Length: 597
Image 1 (cartoon, rainbow, N blue to C red):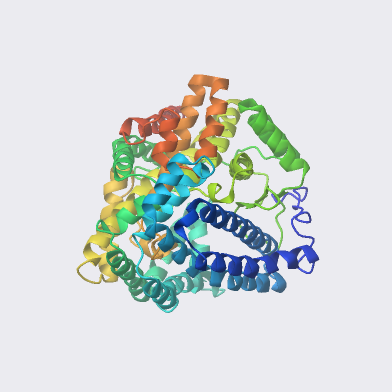
Image 2 (cartoon, rainbow, N blue to C red):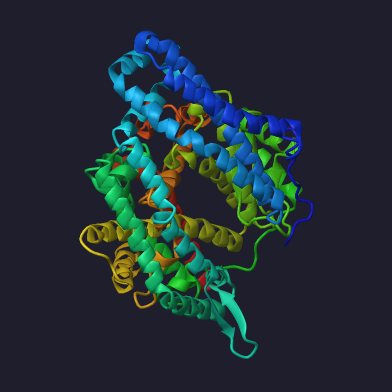
């Protein structure tokens, strides 16, 4: 149901509007800070390196704070009113303002590299620069993985008509492709609409939509396969020139701020859990009255009986559950609701989905969601407020310490929704509990098992792409192999989805290869933390906030080690997976009990 009592957020203390003096002054700061940074780089001298470095970091922190706040504000206005031409114009205007600063970053890293020994000595021994040690060491590392300033500029310029253009082709083809849905009325459905029908309550609709989706994918497979070859070919070429000896996967591991040993342990733990997930899929098939589960039933709802919530009830639930974990988290939730930091109303012109954004200058977050009264939307609200709480923990730190990799970005959000889930499921009757468990396991299956299949596919694709271009048939072959290896007998092997490579936009970024395993990392890391919370109780709350505080100050291995975890062994990941396997066992029992009635 559309809940009209859900609020709209208040952005006025960020900027009154685009025409305000405050907004205009912030925009003027971008070119001024760019010029200031350029002059500072030209004035480089190693005679007083500390003084020069402190000033450079001050400029970077100020620039990033202003830039992030400006862009976040324009995005916030636009995403709640996509017909707002002024907001769209401002997004383009702000992006253009940032362009001159980009090459200065390359120049800055080159200067650091020229005095790398001195920089490392400073950040090791000087307390004033200690906060920037991870940022500076990371900058020095990435400097070794960049081409010359001229080559990097050329690569960025060519990307617009190369990899970025290929990516846009995939996006355009998949967002505009459509087919006849009803021969009598000639009603059409887009590929996006067909994919959304996977959640329909009617099995006949799900099956028909699935078949239409595959037919539609077949009709556009050649240009999209060309796009995938173009993007991944670019990635391979640039990674070789940037001295990534291990290829795209080595770069992805570094971007995630983890180690290869961590990734291997994560994948190993997920693989060990495959038999349990196949039991879940078999149980869902049984609940739906089938022997084997077809791909189009992965998202099939299993119950019509489920509680709904008003906005006030959702608000009370979130505050209650956040407060049950810690006073800080509970107080933050109260402030978020009281300060109108949440835009929950469903309305025309507003984007779908949900996200959390933040404004470093005012040190405030905002949450966008589309609250419809379902438990899923309550869970989404808790998830996004978890992100917001993460920002609240780091908001007083320098801006360069407020950024964290995707592997750690989902920690607070998944932790927050887990607190809510564990509390609410205890209050439900057996039918509701079965349905809620299924939704939760459905999400887990996607984040772990489907992500594993995507990882397998991309690894195989990259190996073959090193030697030749792949046809659409090759892509389908590799995807089916990956799905069979991941889902096994959990799905009907005759009704898999060979075109997942075509519909998933994550594959089409030259800069972000293997944009899949970080999701699994985030899910299991958060669950591992929750498992520890269940064992330690209240004393874990300070440890938890300390972990969040360090996410932008050290890599994931060091962050977790400081809290007593070792993510380079499968045992840690199995702790998180155990929550799922226990739930799978409970789900199996509930299904068998329901089928006996």
